[in-house]
Length: 468
Image 1 (cartoon, helix red, strand yellow):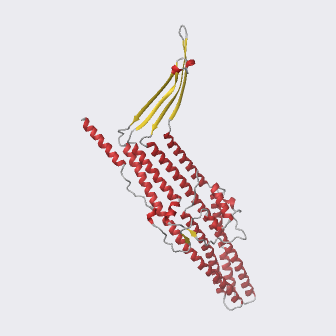
Image 2: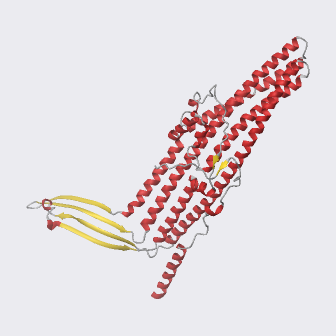
Image 3: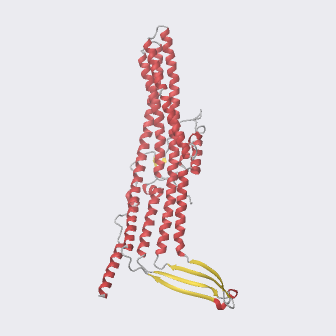
């Protein structure tokens, strides 16, 4: 009967051991084997052997933008939250590393007793001692738990870097969108001035009998139609100013004056040759990929710690101190005591607790591996999409620039011919509408070039090495 019980116990132990050492079902993607080049490898806009820019936003050559990025990195509350998460993970790592060291407690006591007897007696009992408990990490359970927490801490550092990268990109994007809206407002105002001049011309011609009332009405119609665009653009400007205020950690509208468009401002229209590097380098560089990789290490180490729970734990317990019924003689050598007591603790049965803990840890590991694989593939997709968009919008802005120049020439010719009475006013109206449309398109397309560049740098990741 005893043999049968031992056999059942051995089978349960063996089954748990097999479960504990089963290999993960999901394989981690090897970034070195995924691809060696991008789809846009032959494009003249990209370099593959140059190092990636760290402070890439400096390439916009905008002092206001540079100052805004610096302030965001100092004051943004999302970034501060990420920093506290790093601090929490670092504290958890130190707690786990505390298992390498002994626990030392100091105990002291004093007891004064007086007995009501004849004759009366008193006693003063004192004690002072030190208790030591130290787990000798022969199996490696403490080491694996400490390794898990350290990897988790490193992952939070990379998550902090990812937040920083995202914030810089959001800051530049918001700034570009704000400047584009402000330039659109200037375009509308400039076209209003031109259309007002045309309206005055039609009124003068009408007063002299050279134009009809229809021409005057049409001129006023297009003028008021253009004027109606001003509130919508101003609403966009206010929204972007408020968004920038939040990024800066300030009351939204407090930065309105700081973000006003200078009279001598130039449009953000970069034509930058970007160093993208090869795919494997980019993946090793992106903080979200590095964070996902560290989480795999953390979960794998925790699996190891759960497996170690099947094995015995070794302790050394010790005591040293003094105890005496006569307090005045407490530190006499004859009242000294000490003890060293090695011990072994082995959980040989706990129902399904041990196997359940291992299965949960392995499920966490599988989840981390899948998250890493998904992060890697998403990173490749984001970079390739950003490169494609940057290439296409850079070509688009050239065509839109040509269309705008022709629209401007068409408008000037139409007004000149109308003044001479060689064409009707409808041609002028069409020319003015086209000019406003193409000039707006040019501002939007130039902003799209800048935004696509921001997305590309964001996809490439930032080179951050901030220790918290």
